[in-house]
Image 1 (tube, rainbow, N blue to C red):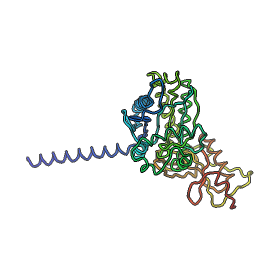
Image 2 (image 1 turned 180 degrees about the vertical axis):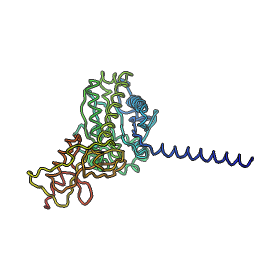
Image 3 (image 1 turned 60 degrees about the horizontal axis):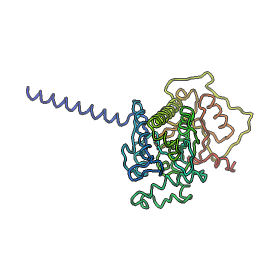
Image 4 (image 1 turned 135 degrees about the vertical axis):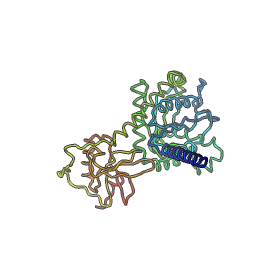
Length: 373
């Protein structure tokens, strides 16, 4: 009898252990939308110097923590911070945190500075089209590398002061630029329309930390702490709360846009079969395949028409942590433009044409310059 009781007890322990371990596994592999919030600078790196005593590292941290608090109220969102206190985190460390988390978004929060009374918000995504102003911003943000021990070893000779060093930074992030721009645009529109702030727009810039994150990534300059009025606003509780709520709203709008682009509800329109307009002459480009990218998401769906508003000929590819969904497959550039128009008519307003050669993605400009017909 005693042996049976012990056996039952052990059985219960084993079952409970199984369920605990199983629930842990499922929680680790949940479908939560993962956002990494990166408060710029920290520790012995205070950020941009100011005459009014405001510290960029402190303001950035307070805003990041506030954004995180809003996001954490949503059960579908998981928040990871690169820092939650006044500590120094290397650029490569920030990128590693995001990559190890397989994050859906990387949002870096900063304050701007200038020797004039310049003011306004800016949100940056990765790019090489640097104006002199953009290069100076990139140089200032990248120079934090020099504060790290053994930076020569860790950054493989990268020189923040050399424009040529910045050109190579776009390669790994290129796949996510479109999604990054979408979020950056939402952030700036919220600043301008909801907070009545001056928006200096969405800009592309060569930043090491954006380059090394393998997911859509933005760097938000919340304003100029060197401006007398704007600096006071950034350092105030009201300003930090308003900015945090505005950034939170932009992130949730971004997530909603992705979720709406691919849905699990059945949608079968009457005009399911799309007829290509044959009046436009063919523009066949040999060895090139064109597709229309209609969505990118962390959600994996079957490439069936009922998941994509009735569109057929859907393909799915995995790139990093994203599933990308494409419509059409043709070497005829005239036809792919018509397929793009059809996708837009179904509600995919931000869809765009992509080109492939020998199975590898190439720029559309490069594809159209191909003369082998």
